[in-house]
Length: 527
Image 1 (cartoon, one colour):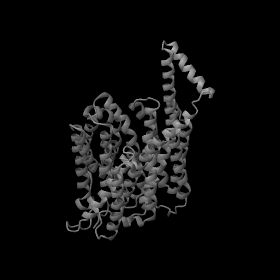
Image 2: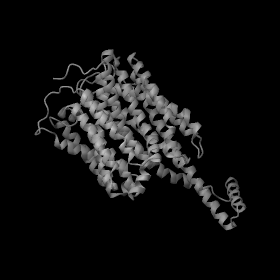
Image 3: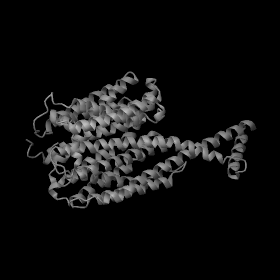
């Protein structure tokens, strides 16, 4: 039987909330903090760029494998025990990552760290939801949402600061004291729901675990490494794609026919959860895609440092933090979730179109400020309504299963987004450069004016005429490359915006019953 209530009050609830957010932040900051340290790792370990890329890939694969299994593990071992064990694994392997002596050791430790971290987001969400009384659950989702939205933004500036002032192992060492404190607080304060009987060892869905691991591991590999290995021109990518497709087919078949499935797919019969799962995918696409593209643009095109690029994102994160409790209150007052999601999608479209309009080879930092504030508002309006819409009509242990689906789809949406953006930009850069160079002809007066100006400048600085002409050609080619990159970034902003805009009419067609206070946000208790 399930416990009557897991609602907490007073200082106990405050401690549980802080602990859960701390764990969510640990996991999500660690997914982006390493991005700015890859160069240092590459130098220290004598690794290639392709090898060091596995530091990110291994963590993401570990994450996405364990997320759908979180609900089942919680039932088997007790949620408190499983949550604490995940934090301990994450912390131990953070220490081992910092002490790795070669690149493949680091990759192996990052994979296990990802397995430990995968449970933290979903379990944190469920614990926070259940710790608040039903009428305050919209606010509970707002508090949880702070960690999920701010985490990816916090990673790059924090990583940049640590790498600049200390050394790369410290991006892992900072997890250790936080992890120890979190584990102690979990064992002391978090309660587990009482589950119905556990699955005996003979009933455990071993094939389901194997097929899920094969499917999501292969899919994540394809998404993370496809661009690096030239997609289907690589036999490895072809084999892993076929493995992912077969793994997916047999996993679905197994879970729908086995009595004790590792992932309860039947919960997707719930219409609200299906819509929320799709929206979580799109939201992950936009959240991780834009968090990836802006630092890339500012560093590669504008020549900013990692720390400057990271700091640019902070106002948007603070705006989202400000929006969260306001949206929570609107939900408590009964404002329609689809309406809030539609407004959030529109605002995110405005942000993307704004980005499309302002990008140049020398856009100033001031131009980004209000555009990123719009992003912060849009994300604030999307996260909580999508989450509450997904979980609002689920009961009992379905809430954990639902949270696992939305969490996994948000992660996969981010992976799909980054994979598609990098592939598109790689191809479009070549297309745009070729188009621009077509106009580099003697009868183009604008081109000749710039070219002759460069030649004159080089000659005036004491360069022989033949060298001056050669240098001018190189400068014009660099200019074409830079302009081509900017045009590709503009396209990405425009297409992400259109994706969000297209979703607006569909989300407005969603019918929801008016939320009562008794089932607000995530109507339920334990998973």
